[in-house]
Length: 187
Image 1 (cartoon, rainbow, N blue to C red):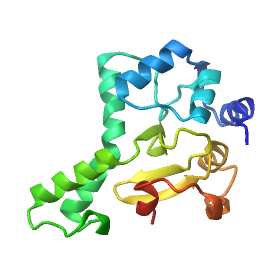
Image 2: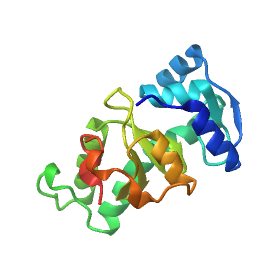
Image 3: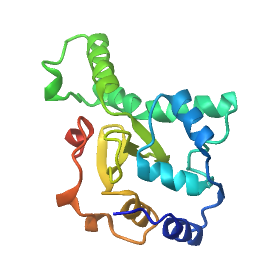
Image 4: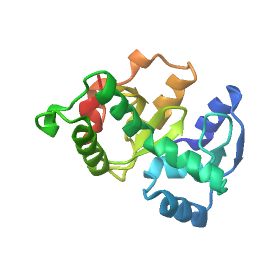
């Protein structure tokens, strides 16, 4: 299904979201280089069509040191949440093997596993899309520590759910693309 960027911009504008002109090819390449990921085609298409700049959205165009640090922190938010839950809520993935007795060792393993996982790209607030596979239609996750749920089976349904134009329970859960690591964390 082709992404209807004009439709998404229209529904977001109707919800008060502000936009600036879309990113160009050079900006996309620079952003992907700075943060070490590749935009999936549908998110790239949307951001090249029009760049949402309202509070909560990632200001990809701002390359100030402060903003780059802020965006990197958003990329690291899912790991920080996992570490918090390892420390405070006994979180551990069976796939990681037996949990070490040492908190330091447990955090080291979790960090290694996180680094092997597809990178989550922040979209809005604590909503993320995977950079892998590099194709359209990746699901959107709501990530708060290890409380991770699907918030859209694609970008269009995600924005409808996020801005109360569709109930989260009406997502097509049976056809959500499986994303290594992250789909296993959905609860």
